[in-house]
Length: 260
Ligand code: GLP
Image 1 (spheres, rainbow, N blue to C red):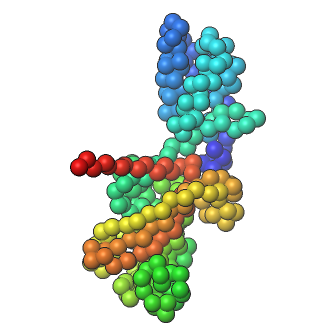
Image 2 (tube, helix red, strand yellow; image 1 turned 90 degrees about the vertical axis):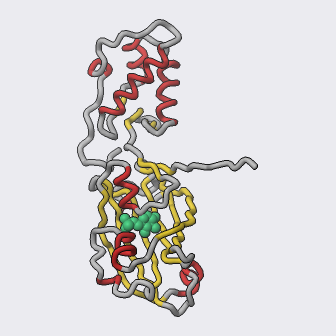
Image 3 (spheres, protein in one colour; image 1 turned 45 degrees about the vertical axis):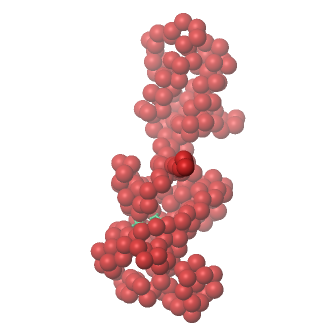
């Protein structure tokens, strides 16, 4: 995908990779192809083109349908993506979003990525009716609005807008949130424990403004995650709206069934 860097990865010729792969007898060919493609995906930078189905079929001595089926499987798993008319490419590595209540910083670290933050704006304002309802405060109360671009390994991952009740976090505007973690400040500066959150996840395309912030193209799919966060006493401490790049992020859910 063009977003990761300006240089286009070199086209891959079938002969460049696995030139001496021994294909197993019929039946196991699909599984072997899957393995070979997985190795490519692991080794190639995101955005690298995969050779055409026809070239691959010829190179590995298998039917085109066999190749297509395996490429489809990898595309379904999000490891490759198809671009109609242009071919098949290695997808961005995705990052999972788990059921644990984590901060962005913890979420990225857990996945071996270096979290980062670019502050776009932090200001105090009047809550207004909608935000007041979200934060369970009166409409005339003050809130602090924080807008940040969150990065993983120095690449934009999400654009976030968070609102917190100003009364609960005095001096937050000047607390030096230029880079670090908001939840760290909550806990260490204000002694507020993040305890519980309800999240709503929807999907839609990136607007031009969001795409600019996230260093990608408008119209690309994105996850929109709203989080209402409470402290250990049940008071709302945050209402956040984040938009995550669909090519880099993944939402993983764990559901538990009780048997009575
Ligand atoms: C996630 C949540 C936000 C929260 C943020 C805190 O991204 N969606 O609601 O504000 O984590 O992250 P950090 O502590 O890294 O600033």
